[in-house]
Image (cartoon, rainbow, N blue to C red; front, side, top):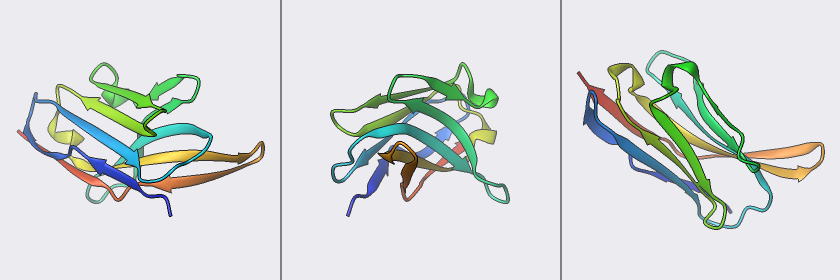
Length: 120
């Protein structure tokens, strides 16, 4: 059974940086989109960034210019480099892999979540 294993979260001061990693424990074929989401206390989970297999990248406006998403398909790993962190970035961060099953079907894998806490 494939699992996504996240690492890199922690406590950091405002203005600091962290790098999150998310690797698949097994083989996932045809991963289309890899992404990061986050959920702050009392709020809904929100999309942070996605990167497609073709390299198309999207960010939520609040992290543009501060966060960078990248992927290594050989390692089935996605990264999120976070800089200039703010207290409002505090959340549990989840990675997501979208596997293409067919042209009309897909399957989502989720990581267990890693806590990022930014102190002001």
